[in-house]
Length: 294
Image 1 (cartoon, one colour):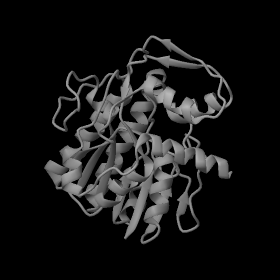
Image 2 (cartoon, one colour):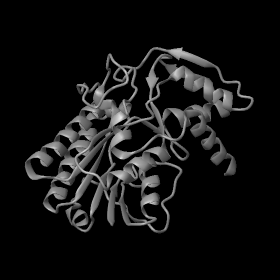
Image 3 (tube, rainbow, N blue to C red):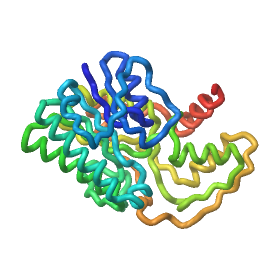
Image 4 (cartoon, rainbow, N blue to C red):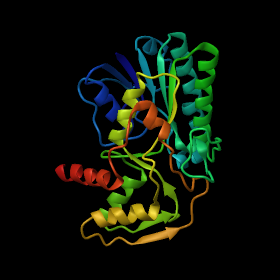
């Protein structure tokens, strides 16, 4: 297949592009808005374009489009809501329209943020959407655009609502930040010790995304299905960091952030014949092992 990945030089995109390039022709576009420590392999064709530009011709040349590009940090979306709307909604509309026009399969990367705060865990796929911040709202809008084109124009699509993805090479998210701080003996600030997060290792995410190119019309949760508090995460990383003297300070939760999330992944398991393979402890150990090889 010929496959296009928007945001394909990002953390998730790089892993996905390198995996798909084993058996497919893969093209990546990315404006490099967010940096990471990974490299695309030499089989992947990289085009440093912005998704705001007209990419209809590029879409017409590919069979499958993975739309990963987005402003993906909650606090950034709160600080820059207009940019978030432009990148996450307007660009998505253009990509959806082009995929529809040229009859290309679209796999849309959504987020667990669309659910907001839910009273009942784990959160099922049919739970009411309750966006708490501009990023979440932009993903709800993106999903609505995708589904509406599917209903009106028979767009071939899948939507995957990802929880917190982690792995070697990522930067600026909670796990890589905590690892670096514990290694350098900096004190850790927890914005809510009882904040519940569902962490899923990058290899398990890529396995699902690869499977989705053979499926149609699915909306799925993608997480480990296991809940972890921020305090549990911090204690685990400290345990795995030799001789760290960092202290853990607990602060109030930040406005606009979701306080608790755990994904119900039963449909993902059954419809894709998939199981997450890497526990949080195993995943963090893998990150440490990769770093020790550097």
